[in-house]
Image (cartoon, rainbow, N blue to C red):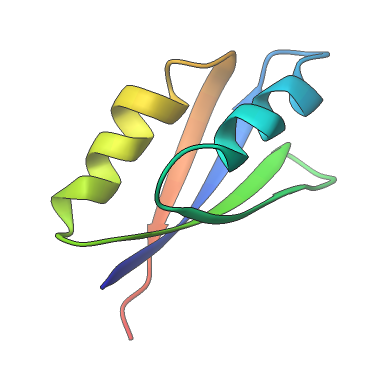
Length: 75
């Protein structure tokens, strides 16, 4: 099972809306609002690995999102 953490920067004022939508995406195991440069941190688990790319690109980035940073877990 591949695991990744995705740091999400949303449009101003849409943090709660994006958080709700991200939590509903299949493969997202956790999602939390955070303080700092990014607005949301999400943990994704998927198999095969390419499914993570699909979730980030075609589901998360289609929301009111300015940018994402995907961190793939190596161990």
